[in-house]
Image (tube, rainbow, N blue to C red; front, side):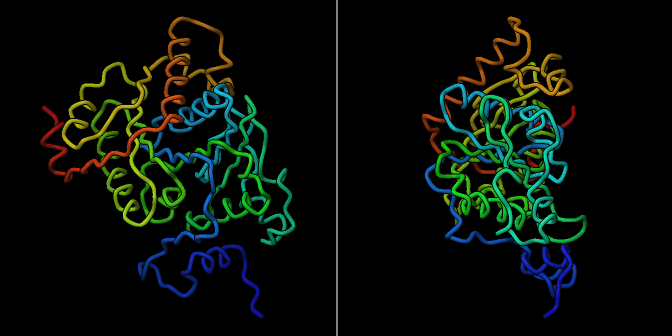
Length: 305
């Protein structure tokens, strides 16, 4: 029997052990037996550096303050999605698997699930070794471990916080599990351009899976005029709006969620907005049927003057 090293194991598991670069597809199909179950599942996407992890973590806390049992899954090799919840960079699922030579039956829940602020359960999926494997496999293994240890049965809300605006088959894998996909964007051209590609990815996944577009969370923005114009053009919806406050930036430096920061009128308004957003998502938002624009059309709509 040939023993595969971890990168080779990842390539084999993603269905591309014998593929040359550029040949075939490395998208990972969802195993019907690995569906999450009764929890409401949200997948958060957006341009890199736009504040997805800050948004996801504070939304997780807001859900917990509504009495919901929350699980946040970071899907980024940088594995810092849950940093403000746990106050550290926790080991990833891939770290845990490597520690037992990729024998998942040897893992315990405490090896890859960590408690966070407000009772939020935190998991960092991590990523395959650089240049090998597929992010979709990592997401699939994470959900499989959670199911095998019955950790999803006592969960009301699952939030996937997904790497940047990468919408390849691998990092689109959380869309196979999600009920609603949420986009985080700022009121600027680059964010909206990335959002348009994400909307196209969600549309593609919705043909075969239950995921539907929920709307955009506007972050780090004083105004929303550019996003409003884009939303009107494609049939998008704004779910919440968070300003560019220095306190929000400092919260991450202080390893804190916004709900742990000292009270101020501006920050209290942001906390209230997160609570409103959580309540709105829990109540259910109607799926959107937005039509993404061609690249050239975005330039014509929002182009530089």
